[in-house]
Image 1 (cartoon, rainbow, N blue to C red):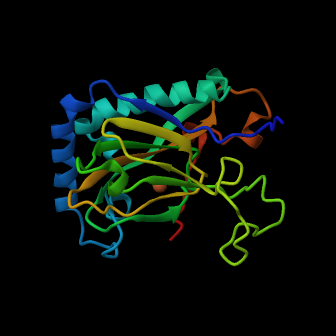
Image 2: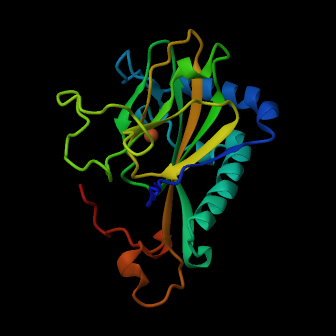
Length: 237
Ligand SMILES: [Fe+2]
């Protein structure tokens, strides 16, 4: 008998056609930024992430211009597919940073609370097998079909089989040259890199605001564009 499913999470992805010709220059730029950054603040089992090391504005770095343009293009496609009227919003790259995951490193489960859309680009993926080099894992916090809370926990051991109707996470193996977009509030992490090679990705956080000439009332529900903000005239500290 039929079972309808509703309210899907929309994860967008595109394999960028010019990825190969940009790889070497981008990889060199990332590794240079990592080497020049402040002393490592990550635990040994955690991947090196630029945002924890002062490397969070690569969108302003000319070496990343091609990638920034790609992100902008595909975010517009993504938001169009989500049904958003692009004439009523302004879009900003808020932060962008590289992530370098070495042998047995991962990225813990998190969400990007200060942004609206997040992007990740796989710049360099170990050739020894992408499944082994760290998957992007989206965590289902809503659990629409968990008819009794905690039903699938290890303590109940009640699930006879895992199906698309009860899965609690979705895994994306990294594909070199692929760009993935998803809602920034969606919790996610990156599983362990079991390979001996480095896995390098670049993350972007994008913010939507109301357009500068928005109709009255819009700013109550959608952040006004930063050009309309005013910093305090007196220092806050
Ligand atoms: Fe993330």
